[in-house]
Image (cartoon, rainbow, N blue to C red; front, side, top):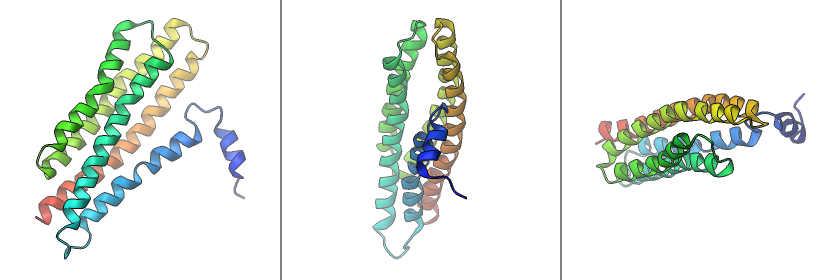
Length: 181
């Protein structure tokens, strides 16, 4: 018997990653899949593929900006006692959007491949910074330090799964540009 929506939301209320973070994270993958599929669809329509690849590239750049901005949110919400970590989080927060901008001015197919690499790099950097945020929370004696540790682990697990799907979609777009060119 399915649980009512209120019960599902309440069951996730104490979890480090809320129900809505997980749902919206996966919902954010839908445009990647749709644009990648569009790049393969309708071979008789010569305008559809460039349009779909343009949307795929632009959406990836927007998502990379969001991924970086999350680090600014962490620092703004809870300034860290570890100032080198805080500076690194702020600095990294702007790098994905700048790298994505560079990818957008590349030839489309290679820009998609470069965007996939930036998505992988962003996940790798998250794998360094988020545990650092958790350690800083524990070192500062924050009352919710244990939650930060769980949050870091859960967020990285979700990010890994989302990253895998996004990279596959970007690779599919890249392949469509090469196979159908």
